[in-house]
Length: 299
Image (cartoon, rainbow, N blue to C red; front, side, top):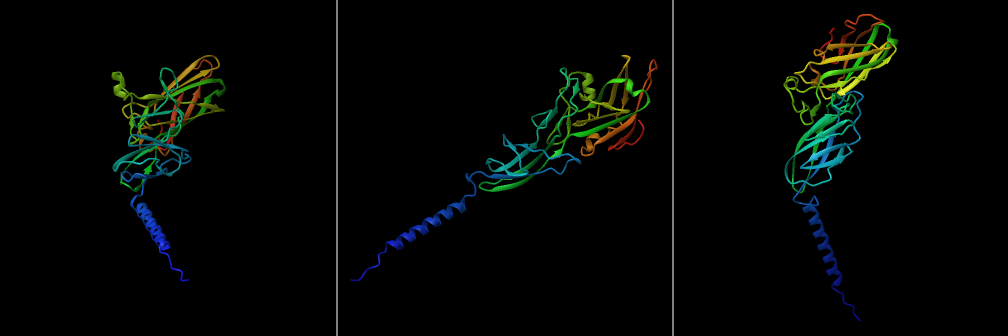
């Protein structure tokens, strides 16, 4: 008996081939889950930071009305976007800083807001514009610039008795309270009085001096200075006999170009005299040297 070949196996192979081709065509047509939208792969660039300043462990990106919390320096933003130009705003959120409407503001240390916190975490921020393409992925680099600058103070007690000093209160006047994350420009707060208008509503920053032997040292971090306001240091020493001595010094020259280069710390050093007993006060403080600025002269 002759056995005839059935056509069914051939038909099955053809159907399988057609299904496979259909699947391949579908995959080739659509590159994203939503063909009418596009995706973004983001690379953050942290090279614009000072020596010894670490890269934050996480950061925030605002895009198209949404906010994303990210960690990796290169990552896909977990969303799809409508085609067209889109602006990305990136920043970290350090301790002691609040961010609203693209502006970062340093917290105050006193209830009346008279002193700005000297030790906020380091702020980075930046912006980038890219064009989203429907059913495609675009890559964009986001530069994250350092937006705060450090100031380091060192005073050497060159006369008198350092052991008579029981307390130190100090502040720097003429500082800026806020900075625009996109532009890096310092921003002042709401102006309340004519005096505020003249100074751009500058604030004072607490200088947390610590005495070790005959040395007083401190460091602060801040967005910048208000150019229309004078920068002054006010240092009050309390002594064992209950007396207090205050020294006020104009340091505007040292801070003249402070906002221009946030990556290099500004270092001010000088001498301090601690009066003994019933000595008259006089000029007990002199800033004599500036490093990291455009000035290196006696003030």
